[in-house]
Structure formats: structure tokens, C-alpha cells
Length: 131
Image (cartoon, rainbow, N blue to C red):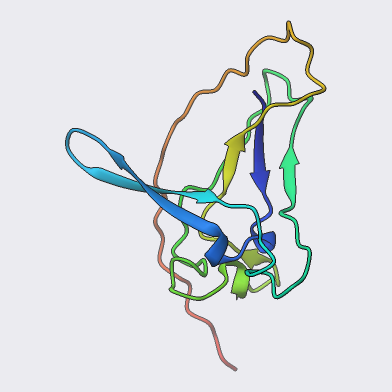
């Protein structure tokens, strides 16, 4: 099954469901994105915007953001992409992603292979010079 990612600006917090992953030494949390309903979209027919990369080769990688403290969810806001970088790009808390059944894949297509590697990068915010 291919892997797809949702454009975070197309998901509202009330469309996310938290689930727990129980490990031997801890309990982790993750999120499911539920389809938008008329109730959550104010009567508008809204769809999530999904991306996937069907022609990736073995020498290409897809990096998924695990958590960003600058994102809206991390800061307790009601929408994830309300935070802007200095260059105007939006900041999300994490990447919503999922495997999916691709009806255009041949039945004998090789399965997707992936390696999950997690790393943490922490840095201090730069102070803004006000002149």
C-alpha cells in the first residue's frame, strides 16, 4: 500500500481522533484524521487534500515531521496552521499520514518498503532584532 500525507491546512482539530499506543514501558499517543462532516465544516462540502508520491525510487526519501512545538496543535490553538514562519510559510505540529489502497496499482506490485528512523532536533529560537 502506498503512503499518503494530508495537507495540514485542510484538516481541523475536530477532525482528529487521538488513540493510544501501549508499549511495555510507556503509553504513546497518535492521531487519526476522520473525514470532514457537514457538522464540522459549517455546512460546506470540504475534503482533505492528500498527497502521495507514486513514482519514488529507492534513492529517494520522504521525511515526515513527527512533532513541532511551533505548530498550532502543540500550542493549544484551534487550527494547526495558524503559526507563520518569518517567510510566510505555515507551521504544522506534525504530518498526518496513512497507507491506502491504490486501485491503479497492479495486483502483482511489490509491497512498499520503508524504514522508520526517528531523530530529535532542538534549537533555541533566534532573537528578533527590532530596529
